[in-house]
Length: 276
Image 1 (spheres, rainbow, N blue to C red):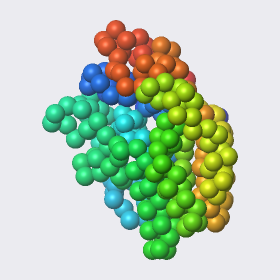
Image 2 (cartoon, rainbow, N blue to C red):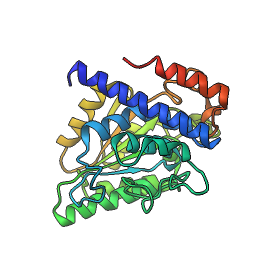
Image 3 (tube, rainbow, N blue to C red):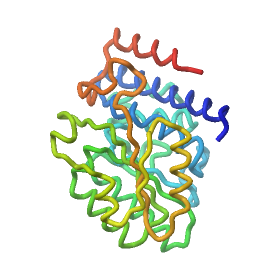
Image 4 (tube, rainbow, N blue to C red):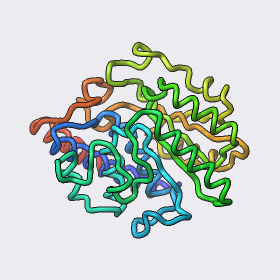
């Protein structure tokens, strides 16, 4: 990837982060911390990797994306809006009573959403089904799903992992957002799910561990995932919760809290200063 393209993607990720902050501020609720941590991954997947067309969101041959940690819908909505699936201006209607942008993704109302999610563990399970369907139908689309590290404490995640490896779903790429925090505190203190790499490897996954904010590392990981045959891949992306907003970074307090007017102003100022 050229340095110019990396700069473009960094700026796209920054726009996604601004959308997250604007949306949660307007809603006065939501989940900014874990949304901000995946902004770089979302920018790469939607603007560099996936075969998608905003004008044909249900095209049969498209790649699929499932946000298994559905509470971070602000990240998905901001990404879809900036990718052209719906107006960016609609982001500030998040969670409003008459808005199609609900607190969790709804595939029946939001253009570009491939699966309704929210109940943790559901998304990766649905992604496995999509990948198997592609195999059965002889299609060459790929399926990507982002799961949370707190979500990985759910037994359903590991049932899905067993399924993915049993059916040799090499068209499935799981991205684990390893930011280290969940709603009640550090994941290692709430219900320690580590070591993720050893566990996924034991189930039969090809495992790649990266810095989830390094675009060169992100690109190399996704390229490697595409080259793997006979097994699914998990990319363990080490990230910073609240990435890009200084007072939100590595703070569990911003798992499910929205910025007030003053905090919103500070956050937007910081994010504007990040543009290259």
